[in-house]
Image 1 (cartoon, rainbow, N blue to C red):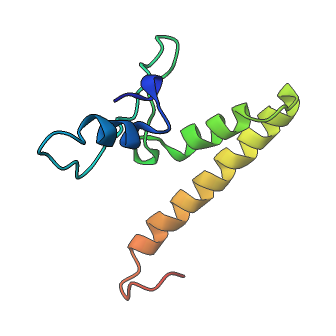
Image 2: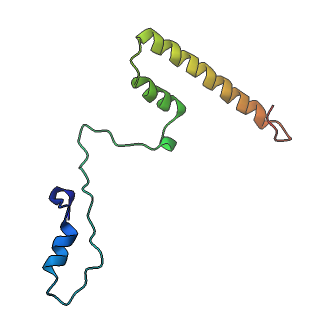
Image 3: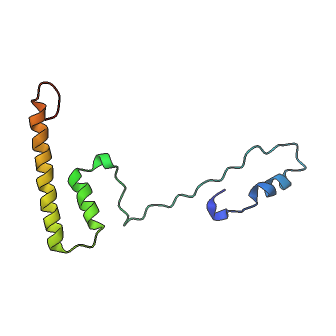
Length: 100
């Protein structure tokens, strides 16, 4: 049964149809309809497939910002990421494994 043919009283109808037969209906399962992906729809990506910059840019796309604000935010983001990466490189050389 697909959701296009959804009947709220399906189970009762099946039980009524089988009432004279020597069978017992144990379970009625409804199949979820899957909508085919539109050609214009982008395939979904998991977070592990994206870089931090990709995530940041996708998030910016959801906001209504002026181009100057987008440029400023992107520049600040790039600076923060560079600082974090530089900090990770210096922590790698730390022999006791404790972050500085």
